[in-house]
Each structure stands twice: as C-alpha cells, then as structure tokens.
Length: 333
Image (cartoon, rainbow, N blue to C red; front, side, top):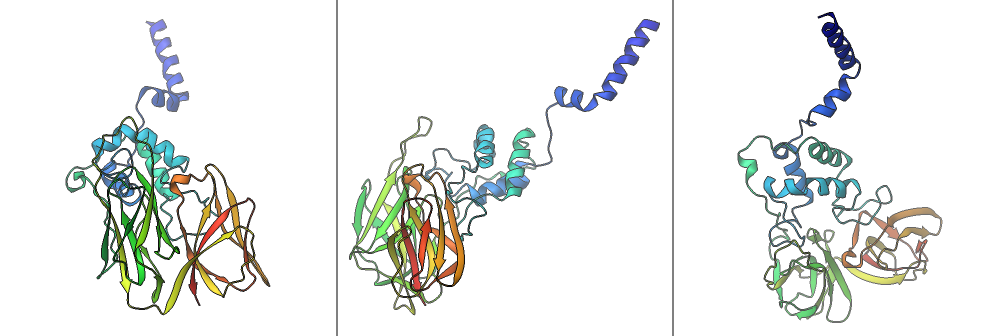
C-alpha cells in the first residue's frame, strides 16, 4: 500500500509541476472565437466578394460547412498576407481600396482555426452569405460584354462618367482593363474590387465604343465548371465635369512636364514576381512614399487608389528602385 501511495504522490507532484503541458497534450485546444460571432463577419467583409458560388475564386466560402474544410489553408493564407490579393506592403502608403485583414482580424482567424473551429450559436447567422453588390447610384448604365471574348467593344457609354464597376460572367476572369474608343485608358477592375467612385464633381471623358480586355486564370482541379455568361460593365454617366480625370502612362523616374494635377491612383506595371518601391519627388518638398509593391502577379495588376490625393507640381516625378511603368490616374486642380 505504501508503494502505491508513493507512486500516486509522485504522479500528483509531476502533474502539478507540468500541469500546463499535460493539459495541452491531452485535450484539444479551445477558444471563445466562433464562426457565428466573429469569423462569419470577417469573411463577409473580406472574402465573399470573390469566394461565392459563381465568383472568381475557386472555392465558395459562404457557409460554415464550406469554410471549415479550408480553415487551415485560410489561416496560412491570411498570416502570410497572400489573401485577399493585395501586393502593396503595409506601412508604405495608404490606399482607399485596401481589402486586407486588420491584425485583429488575422488573430481572430488564427485563434478560431487553432481552437477547433467552433460554430457558435445557430440561427440567422447560419444563412449562406452572398457578396454585397456594388452600388454606383441612380442612373448607372449597364453595358454588356459578349461571352468568352478576351477583348470586346461595347457601345453606349456616355461622354463623361463619374464611376464604374465590372461584373465578370466567367468565374475564371481575374482582371479587366477599360479603354476609351480614342485609345485613352479609363480604368481597371481586379477580382474583389468594389465600385469606383471618382471625387465629387470629377469625371473622365469617354468615347464610345469602350474596349474591355480581360485576363483569365487556369481552372483548378477541385472547382466545378461553370457556364460562362455575358460580363457587365456599369458606368455612372455625367452631363459634364467640373474637374477632369484622366490616365497618364509614364516610366518610373521620368520627370513629369504636364499641367499641375492631383494624383488619385497609381497602377504599377511590373513583370510577374517583380517588386518596386515607388515614391514622389517634388521640387522644394520632401519625398513622399507612394507604395512598395511586392511579388506582383500579372493576372492581378490592380489600380491602387490613394487614401489621400497627392499634389503633382510641374517637374515632379515618381521614382522607383526598379525599372517599371506606371499608369497615373489624375484629376485637374
């Protein structure tokens, strides 16, 4: 009996001294983060614009049943900042269209995944999610793009437009560019983008027909084929513009000799996997960081809309630490 009691005593001491490690090794981790209360809202805000049935991502993430098998992959992708697609490094410039998760949202996703992916309270939050449809406002005009075309022209655009949105009919489409009938660039769309609204009183001149060029990704082996349908370009017409918006293409580092303007957005044109730090140089002013664009994917070369417009004076230039081209979206002052 004494031997048995001695063994029990030694075991009890070992459990006390190593209690935390014993509990971690013998029980599944737990968390108070649930799908219904926290994770669903994050996915709705950050992911479902692409990950829905018929959307441009390979797998839908609209319900708990769809999300849970991908939980580990989702955690890995958001920790590595590979999802949502966004090539601008954080801390270098600020952008109005940044879809990235906040550090707090990343921690919640990681805690939920490592904690066993609890579902949480059932009820209304179990209803499958749907992407929020873009709202251009009253008077938006719908322009249909034929099915299956890598490039197409559509007629009917107004002379001036104050915004646009694109809805691909093919889930393999990753991005699109829009060009005016006179060859001038209008703008872009990348999977997950919200509608573009130009500043109050500003509009971009458009000559009909508008050319739409799209890029497509390869189909994965785990996604179901989807029948393609016509894509839709929506534009918001304006009778006139108090301030004119236009797009200039320039080489990184080239001095700008055009009229004074405010810089609304920048689109770096880089090869697959390339990176570039981009900054603004103006006479008599300190350098202003515009962005650090890393590991760019040519299928997702988006326009980065500045959170605050930057003043471009005569003889200013946008410099970079790598060879690149830039598309600058400008507005008259």
